[in-house]
Image 1 (cartoon, rainbow, N blue to C red):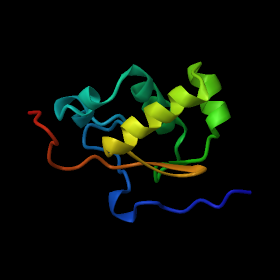
Image 2: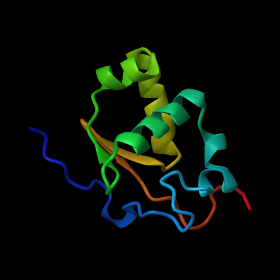
Image 3: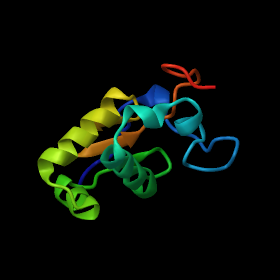
Image 4: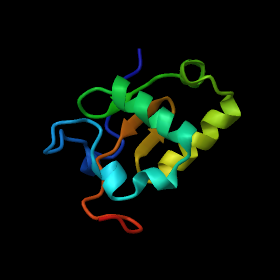
Amino acid sequence: MILKHLLCRDRVRRVPAQFSWLDQRLVRHDHVRRCDCVALALYLVLVTVADAQGLSFYSDRRLGALLSVRPERLAVAREQLLRAGLIAYEPPLYQVLALDPTPVGGGQ
């Protein structure tokens, strides 16, 4: 059994004011521009399957099957999400992170 633990305690996600796990700042603060479609699809899956703290431990094999991508492409997508500051990853554990309060690279 995999023991879950927070990877980034200072960025535990909370339900945003507009009451949606998909925070509107993803678009408003240009987070989506820093990731391609496969990375954003991976993010959607991780947001959907994560627990209340943003934690999940879907395997690469399972994620690849869900997204219909090869392992190498999944790794590229994961790296984009890591660089964008949207997730933390310590195999096999993912944490969907709270979005920064200030926009990175522009936005409204």
